[in-house]
Image (cartoon, rainbow, N blue to C red; front, side, top):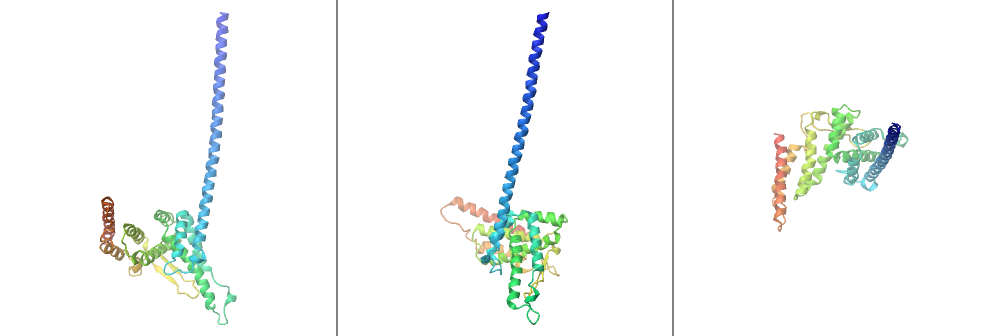
Length: 306
């Protein structure tokens, strides 16, 4: 009996020690897991902070590129020199940053003026002073034009959702942003894509994408609120534009139905031979299929206006 009790006691002690060791091991494992999670969280936070620093640096560099002196000399009819920086800015900025920056620029345009001490004896600003300050306003305005014009489509949709449908803080600014987008893209198309032969599928696709951006805004349910008024120039005439005039007519530079008809004619005029290089039947078929797809896309847009 004593032997049995001793054996039982020994087994109990062994089992108890194993249980304690198991509990300790579990505790150590939990501690190690928590430590690992903390390190991972710290690493992820570090990566996020690094990525954000890189993103902000890209914003600064793209803005500096837009405002480089060589890019802001010739602003009309399109500020071509500002486009590269504007594209990068629009791709990098958040939708909130885009609309807030637009708001800041509009306020600068409104408030920026020479000191009254610079007025001449007649009470007016000398021509060179007026030209300098009007140019500053135009540079800021063209930042809005180019950024809005080349802003990625999904971000434009998000701005509409957040600021217009969502009753955002910058709703009125969003209407100006959309007007700037339409006005810029309309002029850009007239001066570049439509001014030259649209003789490759890539050029044709680019025209369809840009005109599609205009088309989408022209059909919004809030289209009558999309407008812009800049009346704080010193010598230059005010800029007052709206998506549709009082009669419901569109400006020719963004009249989508007319522009789609022009684009459709270019298929027979510029892509008549399909821009096909002989020697590759596979490539030829691919190009012909793409041309057919693009033509059908344009036809769908035309039908949507009938």
